[in-house]
Each structure stands twice: as C-alpha cells, then as structure tokens.
Image (cartoon, rainbow, N blue to C red; front, side, top):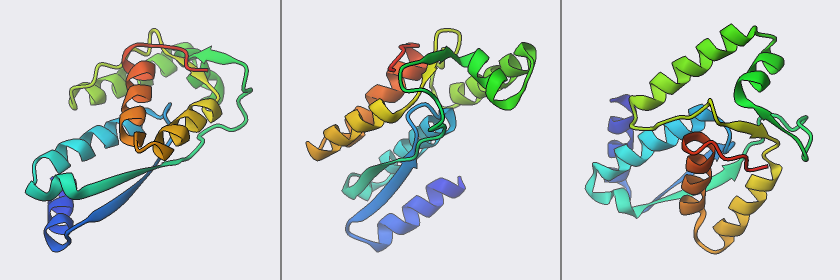
Length: 149
C-alpha cells in the first residue's frame, strides 16, 4: 500500500517520470519488487507515462563466469547454511513470490555469474527493449529454472 500510494502521488504530480531500477536478474527480491512496481503502475491512469530504466547491480561478482550452481547449494555455500536452512529460505522466498503471482522454481534454478545477463539486458536497453528483456530474464531464471550462464 505504501508503494502504491507513493507511486500514485508521484505520477499525479508529473507528466513523465523516470524510475531507475537497480537490480540483478538473479535476485529474487528484485523480481518480486519489480512485479509489485508493475502492478502499482498498472493501477493508475498515468502509469504508462512512467519510464523504467534498468541498471545493473551485480550481487556476487566473485562467481566464476563459466560456472553455475544449483540454487540451494549456492545459498548454503554463500551464507554458510545447512542444506535444510537454505531450503527453508528458498521456501520462504517462494511463498513471498506466490503472493505476487510468481511461480518460483528454485528446485530447477541455477545461479551463474550475472555479467553475461547484464550485458544482454544492456543490448536490449539500447534497442528500447529493456523492460521486456528484464521480464524475460527474470521469468527464464525464476519460473522456468533455466541456467542463463
């Protein structure tokens, strides 16, 4: 509700607004927030006048560019969790995503270094397709479990 009212107030005061979205395409919270933002924008008359500009934020630049890890294994290794703890966190994130109508498939997801995906996103941005490409990358990774590395 706070996000919706803030977006509504900003849209009503301006004729065109630019929102810079700093995210990593492998960040589940970024995908959930982006879905919430899209819903908020869709509710208001001037929502189509908002320009979303996607910016790259690489969550884990230490990951090797040529390797991918199963999501649970990556989470356990990165945060020094047991497999059970890592699974519990993934389950909680999956439930949060469901509230936004997103079907996360961490059982299939692989975590690669995101540098190549960001490069692809920036090529799409140059062609005016950044918003669409961000959606495709989020969906491919989170809901289809594709290894985008």
